[in-house]
Amino acid sequence: MKSLSDKAIERLRAGADEPDLAGTRYHLLERVARGGMGVVYSAEDEKLERRVALKVLDVPGTDNDLANRLMREARVLARLEHPGIVPVHDVGTLADGRVFYTMKFVEGQRLDNFIEAVESVQDRLRLFLRICEAVAFAHARGVLHRDLKPANIMVGPFGEVLVMDWGLAKILHAEAASADCASDPQATILEKPKRQDDASDSTKSSVITGHGTVMGTPGYMSPEQARGEIGALDTRSDIFSLGALLRFILTQKAPSGIAPRLDRSLEAICAKATAEQRDSRYATVQDLGQDVSRYLDGLAVGAHRESIFEKTARFYRRYRFFILLILAYLAMRVILLLVLKR
Amino acid sequence: MSEDKTIQGGDRFPLTRWSVIDAARSSDKAERIRAIDTLCAAYWKPVYKYVRLRWNRPADDAQDLTQGFFVQLIERSLLEKFDSAKSRLRTYLRLCVDSFVINEEKAAKRLKRGGSVSHVALDFAGAEEELGGAVMDPASIPSPESLEEFFEKEWVRGLFELAVEDLRKHCEANERERTFRLFEEYDLAGDETISYEKLAAEYGIPVTDVTNALSWARREFRRVALERLREICGSEEEFQREARSVFGWEAK
Image (cartoon, rainbow over all chains, first blue to last red; front, top):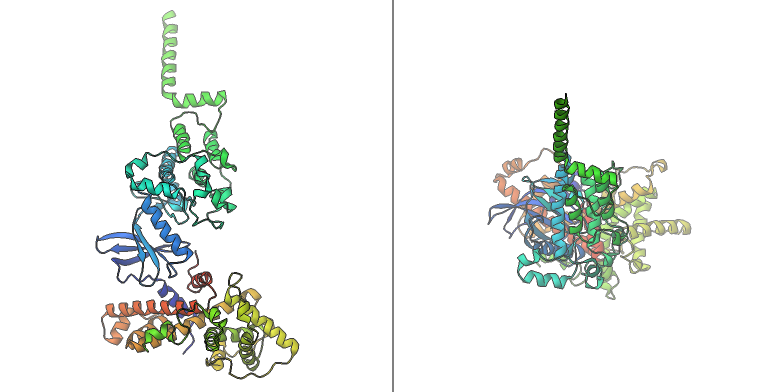
């Protein structure tokens, strides 16, 4: 046969990329994004007449690392029913042998694009707190995200914040979490997160990811994750990523870039969350969230010991209205006294 | 035998055998020969072009060296030494080609070798035509990195050509010759002006039929190409890596 031209090879590649949705309830619409494992398409669920996102592997096969990871990601998502976590609808294998799952189609912006338009520090911190809520929920269900970064956070058209891409998630305490799922799902929302002492028991961790491969994003992954100490990872690894994420939200600079100076309290929060030693970080995501909330409320944060001047300045900022009111009142009294004395 | 069975390996390895590497290590001679046939079909052209370009050999010499290389692959049981955990099969074979050419040069005892190595027809004239019959200028020999890229590119081209041929046979066996012609005209001819509408008008069929036919052909092409690839990889991990590389699915 005639030799294939470079152009023909490119066309064959493009054509071979399309998943075979024959026999499924989905109709392919368009390609949305490509990730490390495969491609995300938008598709129409013909039965429910709604748009979904369909994530599919490139390569066929149900018994390999990538297929196992995708299936695990789908199961992790199914376990995490929370408004801040994208819900999974369906999982299976296509006629061409590729593993896929469908999830809610999120129309919105990635955090790194969205954050540019948010000018107020307070609004940025409130957005960060919503990310913390979703991650704290996942931790409560025994799941570490392990790849928290701006590209994996979506902000929807109504301001909803969704934590995406749980492909690197690690399941801690699998048995306990399954048992929780079987009971009242509402009750688990109120469940306290596992403390650091429990979480560090690596023998209870899922072994699926325990082959020591470094997975994550430089700058956002914790030092222990970067060293490939997968068995040693616990919720504090995600706290490190949240700290890096908070710094990005406040400065819009990537962790490797030179970031502008932050307010001392916020700087202290970021520094504590991203401490080199795990024991020096916040113990739980709630603790981190509480410190950020305290900052928003004008209270002292746990990460920073204030000087008397800082305390005074913060006191002034918090009660500025009343202080100014009292000062105005006192000034009026002084003026009145002076006038009456004449 | 149905076309489906042929495509799935009826004329190659039984499905229970995983790859050409397993087959080449088999104690069954017939299976070893089939392994070399499969490997030869996928690699002879990139090897030939690589020898022409990398070693600046005239066409006659390159033909002898290409055939000699596949003979040595069997005689010296080179495939048995391949470890898929350490490298990709194509990288290993390329290094084997380099070492083979160097040794042949040193010994200066290259022999004209016959075609007994494989049952695969080696169309050297066609390969030469693809190279443009160029006389290689030593000054224009590319860097090792670009030679590696060249070898990979030619290997992908060879793999896709085999898959297209498999698809053609599959279409004929299933009385879908028109589907293959549509596929040829739209995906293989490299004509930028072609469209589904033009093809529909040319064949006097609805555009939806063109869409469905092309969609089927692309799915089948993908399937047969991956089957071919699976055969010439040493392990599942290598297959996964190579598939991502061959189809351009590397993470962007």
